[in-house]
Amino acid sequence: AEGCYNLSSSKLKLGKFNQKQKEGGQILMKRLLIIGAGGHGKVVAEVAADIGYEHIDFLDDTAQEAIGKVSELEKYKNQYNDAFVGIGNNELRGKFISKLQDYGYTVPILVHPSAYVSRTAKIDNGTVIEPKAIVNANSHISTGCIISVGAIVDHDAEIGDCCHVNAGAIVKAGGKVESYRKLEAGEVVLGYESAIINADSNSDFAKEYEKRTKEDVGFF
Image 1 (tube, rainbow, N blue to C red):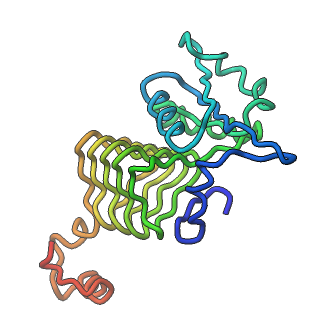
Image 2: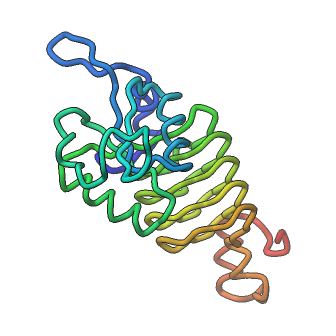
């Protein structure tokens, strides 16, 4: 479905990242326009190249390698179908994703080939999942997130819009990260255990958890 990547229902989508777009029987070069040519923008560019984008350009107000300024987004719409926001600031990233969509760009999902994404995880548009990152079963990564190199989002986690799970950070099973939050490198967000650390084994929460997971609360 538009706006959501789910490996279980669309396994071919990863393969399509490595295919050239076709139009009228002609093979076209896959092109991507990236907003922001700083450090994160360059990481995004490398991930995009590794999944099949062959022509990648930047819009940036100061970078010499940029082909234009950010204010010129509308000007390039006919040259690039796909555009991505390579800005580390969560709030700005969210604003520019909305602008791209308003101008009619397709905002893709970028998943590096070395990352592991569960077939039951859901990834929304504008998210980049960097090398060696893990997104486990039944997790949901919302729009415009950065899942940095080596980060782990364990099963049943919920990551809000425009979050940054920094390098090596861990969101434990059942954890929730509110929209626009940045996790620092190596930070750990508790999941189910945060609610049961002080729970009595006879509490309603503990009983429901044990019934659903077949795990004893003492596991944590």
